[in-house]
Amino acid sequence: MPENARPQPPSLTRWLVLLFVSLAMAGNYYIYDSIAPIADLLSQQLGFTDTQIGWLNAIYSVAAIGTLLLGGIIIDRIGTKTASVIFAALCLLGALICVSSGSLWVMLAGRFVLGLGAESLIVAVTTALAKWFKGKELGFAFGINLLVARLASVAADNSPSWAGPLYSNWRDPLWLAVGAGVIGVLGAVVYWWMERKAEREYDLGTAGETDKLVLGDLFRFTRSYWYVVGLCLVFYSAVLPFRTFAIKFFMEGHGASREMGGFLNSLLPLSAMIATPLFGLLVDKVARRALFMLAGSALLFPAFVLLVPGSGVPLAVPVALLGIGYSLVPAVMWPAVTYVVDAKRLGTAYALMTLVQQIGVLGVNWGIGWANDFSTAGATNPGGYALGMWIFSTLGFLGVLFAWLLRRAETGPNAHGLETIRAGAPEK
Image (cartoon, rainbow, N blue to C red; front, side, top):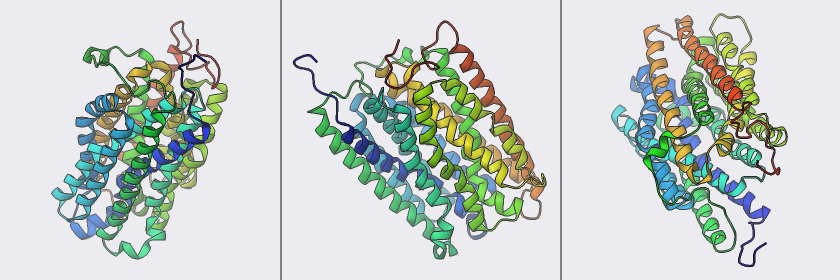
């Protein structure tokens, strides 16, 4: 080691950083998922239509689309630690606005503010992990990060069970989301302190730092990067809007109770909590990242077809398929970007990828709400939910297409090592 070179941070420090940035992201996840368990209460007590309920998450995406690219630039400019605190604070503010009034417009404003901070916070956390873990079990670190964040989603989905007395009205459950936002801000502040201290003692690499932004660089990413972006677009456009309406869908389309609907919806993040870190560890060891993404994407199409009311298949089967796909694809997809994008452009690359994702989530959240209203889906017409399930299954098919294109590109002469580089092995 050169005389003036600083050492790498110790393992314990890296894992503590992982814990606190994951807590910051968990607060964001809980706030976002707090709408699904009260969807029917919003309909019954406030008179919201499914289209309006869809807009509560769609408006989040509108804000994210408007700020994500700027958020990536901010992260690259001011660093992950300061950006994380700013964006976590915006998430908390959004939760406070949302709980303050039953007016649709006030709640939309709160979800809009949440969108200003939440997706940029995810970009900041993702960039931080790339900085602290590249070449050091990065896939496993991403898996653990998603485990903690999805624990918050599981808690939100199952809140009708563990916080049942609060569900006599729409507002009390949203106060739980405010509490989750407070935890998120505290996690971000502790991470800020840890990284500030570590910067004086250790070599933290270059991820999340940039000398100069060149706007033209936004259009110079490789084909492999854009295939990953395409997969991200269709994958999350299927999974996240489904979760927006899932509890209401399970109740009205399949006759489940609110508690059972919440439990079924929670099985997606719950299975991902367990399987995503294991998939990440497996991919670190064997590579073949595009192949794993192809396998995970292939599960979505049959899963949504089997969820059509009247299919006769036990709900456990399609929910299990979705759970495996929801565990596998993100575990591989987000770390894969670090192999096809230069480290100094990761903040912008992740922000652009998430921006495109949010465009899809925006459109599908609104589209599924419209499809449900158009088909008069509800407890008296369960078959009306079929149109939405076919839309989701089509998105699953497109995910297979993008994963196949990525696999083909990464087994050709211009491959970036996505299929071959293993953790701890020297990059070629």
